[in-house]
Image 1 (spheres, rainbow, N blue to C red):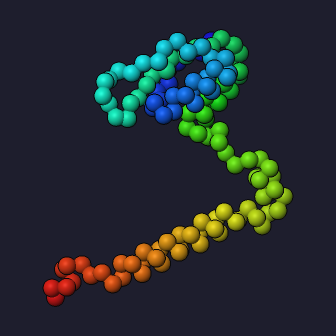
Image 2: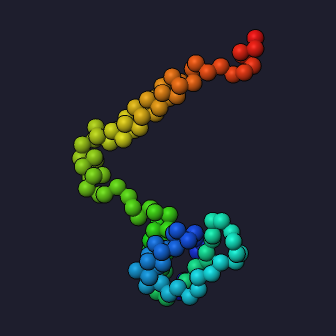
Image 3: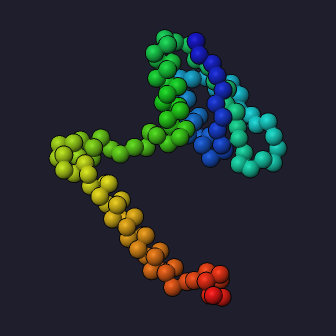
Length: 121
């Protein structure tokens, strides 16, 4: 048997409840401890009976759903990248090009601006 309590925001609540119910966890209470807080934190109490491995996998699934880890890169894309080893570097290469471009644009925008301390001298 497993029982516990997860803390979630109101934005994550629906996904967490959906994940817990899909793995047959029983949700007993949903509550918050403070009024008017921002962001609002909710406490979700749950329980389930079963084998330890099944309970752990179900809880892991719920935690992944809560933080959005279940929305990952599709396996077909990853499989294609591993089938073509040179393509594994593409995301890093693309991110590097974006970063360099961003840095150069920032430099161009701010290179002509002098701090007030330098203008007086």
